[in-house]
View 1 (cartoon, rainbow, N blue to C red):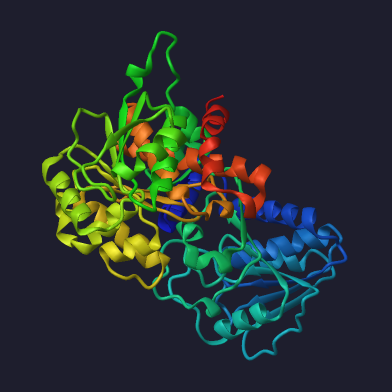
View 2: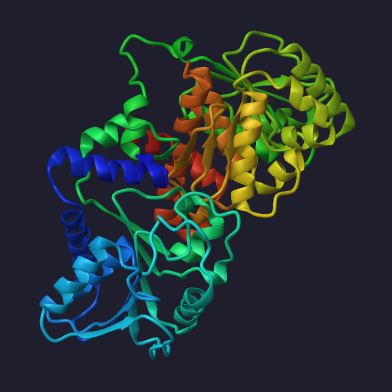
Amino acid sequence: MKIFTTDQIRDIDLKTIENEGITSLQLIERVAESVTCEIISRWRSSKKIAIFAGPGNNGADALTVGRMLVEQGYSPEIFLFNIGGNRLSPDCATCKERLLQAGEIDFTEVTGLFSLPHLSSEYLVVDGLFGSGLREPLSGCFMTLVRYINESGATIVAIDVPSGLFGDWNPRSINRNIIHADLTLAIQFPRLSFFIADNAELIGEWKILDIELSPSEIRRTPAPFYYVEKNDVRRVLQPRGEFTSKADYGSALLIAGSSGMLGAAVLAARGALRSGAGKVTVHSARCGHSVLQSSVPEALFQTDNNDLCITDMLPRHEYSAIAIGPGIGTNEATINALEAFLKSYDKPVILDADALNCIARRNNLLHYVPVLSIITPHAGEFDRLFGAQPNHEARLAKAIEMAHNYNILIILKGHYTAIVRPDGKIYFNSSGNPAMATPGSGDVLTGVLAAMLAQGYKPEIAALLAVYIHGYAGDLAAETEGQYGVTAGDIAARIGQAIKAIAF
C-alpha cells in the first residue's frame, strides 16, 4: 500500500474532484458517512458525545458527522471554533448551515472567549479541530483545549489525524499539545506519522476509511513510503519449479556464534533452512562443532582456527549469500577478521548484531561495506553506529541519510520494522507482534535474509520478503504460544508455515 505525503493526498483529492465531476462537499459527505458508520457500529445512541470542529475542512467533516448522528437518533453536543469570526472555510460554512437546518441540535459556535465544556470519562469526543493540513504546532486557546480534552478521560476519535499532529514528520511537536486519540480514522490512506513509535500514544488504534478517491490518480502518483502487506509479498515470492534441486536455491554462509553465544548461530541456521536455502554452512569457533552438528544437522559446519571466537571470515568457497554477526562477539581478533573480510569482499552482504557492534568500535569500516548490503540494527545498535538519536523519528530520518550515503539497505527493527533503501524510499512492515520481542528473534531474521538472498532475490526484494515472512511466522507462533510464551525457536519453526500461508 502506498503511503503518500500530505501534499500528495491534497493533489489526489483535487484531481478526483476535477476528473470525476464531483465537488469537495461531496467528498466531505463521503468522509462523514464513513466516520458516522464507524461510530454507530461501536457506540449506542445513548452515549454522551461531544464534537469539536475547527474552522477548516476537517471541521466541515466533523460538523457533517454531527448532522448525520442527529439524523440517526444521537444527541451530540457540537462546538464549532471560529475564533475571531469569519474564519470558516467555504465548505465549513456550508456544512454549518446544513447542520443548523437539521432540526433541534445542541450547537455552540465559539468566536471569542469561552468556557471549557464539561467532559468526563463518560464522553465520546470526536476530534475534528485540525486535520493533516495543519502547518504549525497548536498554541493559545487550541493548545489549552487539546490539553483539557486529553485530561478529561473521555474516549477520543480523531478524524483523519489527531489535531496537532502533522501527517508527515513532527520534529517540533510536543505530545501533550496534541490530541491523544483512542481511535484515528484515516481518510483513504495511512500517514507516515502513524508508523513512527513516538506517535503511538497519539494515534491509538487506526483504521483506514475508503472514500473512493480516484484509482487512476492513486496508481499514477509515485509514493515515497509503502506499507507492506501479504499481497505485496505474494506477488514477488517465486514458486518453485517441478524439476529443481537444492543446487537451484543457492548456498548461504552464516558467520555466527562464539563461546557462550552458539544459540545465535543455531537460530540463524534454522531460519535459513526453513526459508528454503539450497545449502547452509555455518562458520564458527571450534567449540561450536558439536552444538551445531547436533542442533542443526541439516547445516554444514565450517571450523574456525580459534577454539572460542571467530578469527577468519574470508570465504573458502563461492557462496550465493553471506551473513555475518549473530553471536560473534566483539573480540579484537573478530573485529580484525571482519575488517579483512569487508576490505576484500565486494558483493552485498548481511550484517547483523555483533557485526554491527564490531563496526561501531571501528567506525571507518562503514566505508568498506559493499554496495546494497543489508544491515539490521535495532535502536541501540543503530545509535552505536551512527550516533545517539533523541527519538524514533530522528532515527528514521538519520537512516534515510545513512542508507543514501553508504548506498546500503537499513532494516530498522521494531514495530512496523522499516526497510530504508538508498533511494530514500521506506517500506514499513505490517506483520509481527510484541511476542517477537524475545532473545534470538533477530538471529532468525538474519537466517531468513541469507536464504532469500541465496535464492537469487535482489537485496531490496530479499529484505522485503524476509522481514514480512519473519513477522508472519511470529504471528503464527503467538497464536499458539501467546504474547508472553513465544521463543525465537518457535518463530524459526514456523517460517515454512508462514511462506506456505503467504504463497497460497
